[in-house]
Image (cartoon, rainbow, N blue to C red; front, side, top):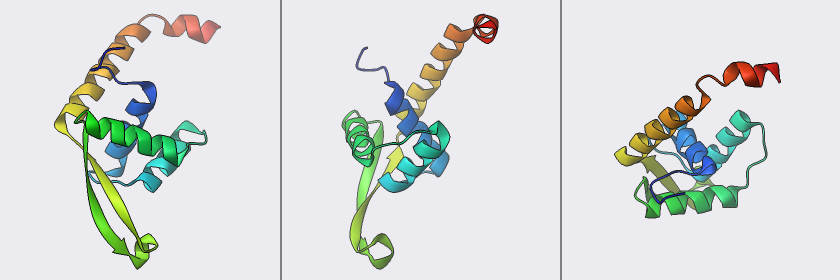
Length: 109
């Protein structure tokens, strides 16, 4: 898998941020992923993916000061960069092309 391609979990994290709005932090991203995938999701795995995506320039973040609403802990908010949307669109196009014509085969079992 090349540097430009997205892994499945990376795609899921990016789509969760897209669904949640322009600025999200780890906890709502984890909850969104768990709800949508119906699987347990490790906050550490999300955090690692976010840092990797940030290093690749697909998301950016800012640290906000601790507040009582945040449990007196600082929160790091993430937002998608334009290249992330381009990568998601390309990943979706690739998957749609791969699935063309095999739906009936999968449905028949």
